[in-house]
Length: 218
Image (cartoon, rainbow, N blue to C red; front, side, top):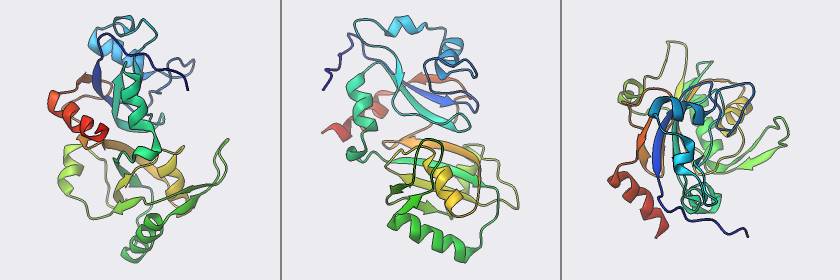
């Protein structure tokens, strides 16, 4: 196993990833979250790099998704948060293209919680995912807090999962013959996105937020 470097000065940021940006370090087609970071903080990436470490994201969101991304130069921190066996819980709000009946919602929830095979997409074949919790009756306060664009004929859902398979939520609802038209991650490891952060902007994690995350390490 490759030994991970320990940064002399570890840093931890919360970003509100904007829709359209990618989590890659470099992209010829889209703006990256690291370009957003430099543009909106005034820092350079070199300030947090060197000695075998660099600023990177602890997990990813696809280009069309938005919301919480954690940025760090601490490889041990990000490795722990992204390994499936550590069961780090993440929450998302999704808005679906088609409205869903109460009976169908109940059926979808049961199937997702028991585990389903996600349909193939791109280079990924059929994949099994387990225990996805779908909450169709979550607080309307979250809709307002995170500016979720719900219309009369759309269903919205709060999703809780511990895995991070490629396009997992989008493939899940494709299995149910529906499409995700809005997807926002609102929490990871029990730390919630600061609703005051503008898209593409970030701030340093607060001590109490780091303490919440560090509870998972012990």
